[in-house]
Length: 164
Image 1: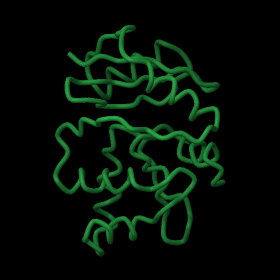
Image 2 (image 1 turned 180 degrees about the vertical axis):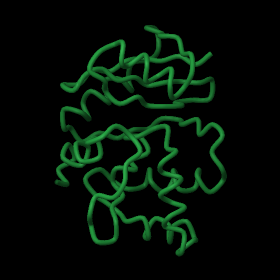
Image 3 (image 1 turned 90 degrees about the vertical axis):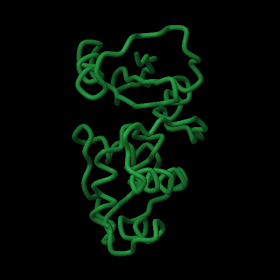
Image 4 (image 1 turned 60 degrees about the vertical axis):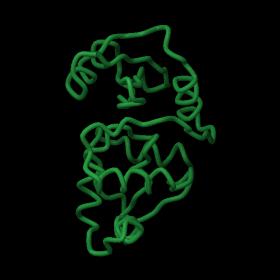
């Protein structure tokens, strides 16, 4: 069974979900515990809270949401992601804090220059936002583009990193 730890922000409480193979998901902050548990259940299925998990990630996430420049060095469990999706996620992890890329540039880095839409589809399945920073990818015209997470969060994350 997957387990989770929590982190707190000014926007509410979020969670880091773990499998036996590593970090399997991030639930962005919710207004209360009931909404958080609902989000975890909806996206990851039944998970058990584990207060004994190493809280390094939770503390780092809390620092991130306060606007501190942090680095996430953690093993990610990509689950059932395809080879292409994993490649996109690895390239996403290479976009530094405070910088952006485009869907097209990311597709080119993956060796598939015409696959900007496929990159966007892979990002829509990203279970680990922030750690795999899909919010740092913009349209070629520098507009925000899509976001499969909670409304307004892409802009909020870009503001936290000083990009808006």
